[in-house]
Image (cartoon, rainbow, N blue to C red; front, side):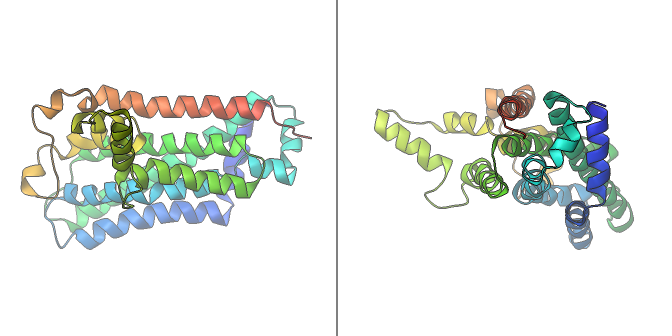
Length: 282
């Protein structure tokens, strides 16, 4: 019994779930479609990676949410957790095992989809794909999505019903992606920072705004994958690069972006475990 047993059983059961198989298939299909559809438009596969990055930011956290939000609260509401905890397993072992299993699915889906993208690139694009670029992109994307895995697993561990977990997960996604990205007019981080500045009588500079954004997962992910596109940005106008002065800013440092993502994961998991430890499992 222990972490390994919980993780193994959850992974095996998940592999038989139509929902989880569908989510993994969606990962593969989304990436494959992007590379296949752009192979006749661009010479370099790295340009397709740029569009895959957009899908990773906007779409794949939702897939991760669907994969994770029921993981723990679903066991509690169905009563399955009584069997798992009676083997016996401690709450820490159960929580860690569930996180490892769901993180394993996310990493497997990420790696599998980008390996498929690499194969399509090698066959369909005029220029051959660069292994190092794909490897860096894969590692950065896996870290970004594991961060969201931690957030959604913490939500699943801290609420008492599946509807609450679903709503909280959607809310977390909205705040951390569309709200920060600025997709919704007037409902975005820029508007909030501007309102705070007006209220306090101070001005929020563009540098401060970018620093605040970099403390959230998606801008931090963008900073980590930026070297993937560094030497090809001049070929494509849609791949912006920071200026030399911008690179000196704290929010443009790779170590700062890594720290931001790792911090989100660790704080989320700590919160999730402390909440789960107090739950009534009877």
